Image 1 (tube, rainbow, N blue to C red):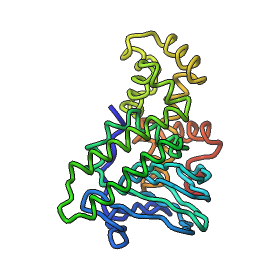
Image 2 (spheres, one colour):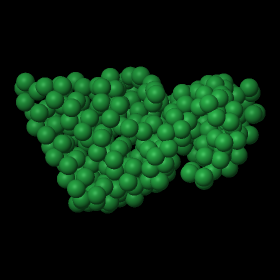
Image 3 (cartoon, rainbow, N blue to C red):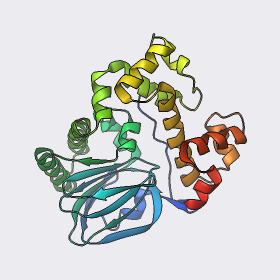
Image 4 (cartoon, rainbow, N blue to C red):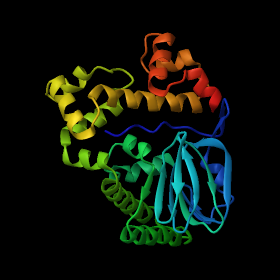
Length: 293
């Protein structure tokens, strides 16, 4: 089971981070219907203030330069890339003159129709949101983007056809991610680790002990650690902690919850334990991270 996508609506303020609904983009859409919008990106574009969306976005860049900051990490924008953003991910960007790109903005319920074609855990894509494409993959994706735009421009557009084309896009992106990142190759070739990764997505808030996951996989905790060290170069515990740390950052940036409430949400017994954990992961306290914005 993949990470669930929380249903959010409207625009919310959480400290300095806005949560923006898809409704805010309907006036400038090039083509669209209730479930999905198509837009084009031309020329210089700057988003100085980081924000999040309550819907799924996939950006396809043709000719492009700039920087796209996603979950506090700067990614260089270049030609023939795809950038995927899941609901709740925080981003901003500085796109240079001459850029040509295309966007699909997808409502949560519609996204779930083709989500299974993203073959890996959503967390994998969130950790690697920028994927460099091969020439053939870019051409295939450009064709599907254009086909979706053309279908959306029809008065009698067929939602099932759009969903099918979106599934093709998800499958191509997954294949390219597997080619680009060792982590994806590992999960594709080692079913136990793939299952472990998905179990982390499901249980990381409640359970952080390696033994729990090993029991679910019908192996020993020691063997699970051996698998992780051999194929991922980190321990099973570190993998669980990375997932907790990622979620902690998102909650600090995109919600108005107090640090004590976030600690409780993530299954920590008290505020101090969570703060010590967060500092061990990031080098700064939760308060400092939130103020840094």
